[in-house]
Length: 522
Image (tube, rainbow, N blue to C red):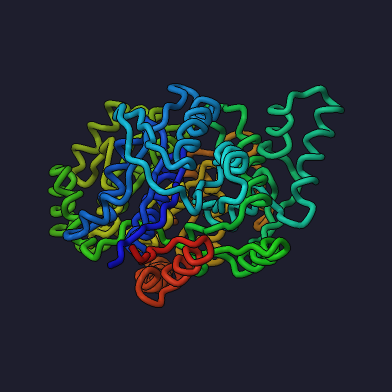
């Protein structure tokens, strides 16, 4: 007689829903492919959302598989999202228990979860260096794999370039600045890694850009410590055992892929493409319908748009849950242009930094062609037949959802990976437009390296650009971009099928880190 002894892996991620969500899909695929047990560690603040997202990755008849993933809520700082000490100490304690095959405590549910065999691997995201240090101390031989939620080309642009001496070179720059200026480590890291300047950056496969082009918008809030986050991400790229991308090779510049592979090969490591990491149940249409049913107002609005305006007529607008402009009037101008053109739209306005003026709300409601909502089932809307264009901040989660749905984009980037994504989407993939007159601040209004032109920065120029882009989007030029993204969608739908790029890469990764379900004699 034999018994099934499952492998066990730990997933740990603490910062940002855009980093947690793809790892939910990854955990589900691990369970489906190998029947492994997964301990998913995240903050108590993201516990409920994580549990919900994990469930979205399983269809009917897969309840037993879903039960193989248990979520462990870790205490984290209540207000400082960048703090790693509180969640780090909680991880230290619970990971020590996991390594010792002891029960692990979930602070969210205030209960112990059953002991499992020691894990064969730890999966962390690019900002998980604190977890990496603990793993190396407690279990030096444990494989640690890093997930990259952003696109590869933006990872290179934000934290690279990657080369044999790149880590020492970056740390040296920071130390030199500290010695010369008396700045603290945090201040120096911010200046070296996340401060706009007029230097030219070279990302393989992208046109040259000024560093300041990564900062197209005046920041709505100013945070210190982002440079340290980028530095720890760089450290992980040099010190981890393997890297997987939440992107797909077809979405990246081939030159960037080649450069990353050459860098990792210096230390006999591999890059695995596991994207697109979205819920895959085989019943995506039913899932989208269920999501829409949670908002009868949105479902009714979409039905009306389909009846009155037809397929691919809707503009969906969302900048994610945080990002917003310091000039809200730019957004209201865009809504005005849409209403003038009788173009139906839904805007998800979730940012705490954006306040909807009563006169704008009244005007939109009276128009009968617009809907502004604090929450929207984004993937379901993009998959709806009315979805024509997606006005997006160009965060990579939104990009992957747009590609998966075959909906072209109008990019309105704010910062982080978004400006580099916008360049790739417009210049190389030709599946998007970018709005340039929405740029704000001293750096945002400077010339672009690839065009030599600077935004005019006037209300008239802003309105004219918005009108021109919408004319193109719903004309022959937009039809070409739609054809291009539909081709990418066709490929994306094959990624996790038997023989698909992501399926093969996942199998190879799991083989390489010894994640398998073994049948052992009693």
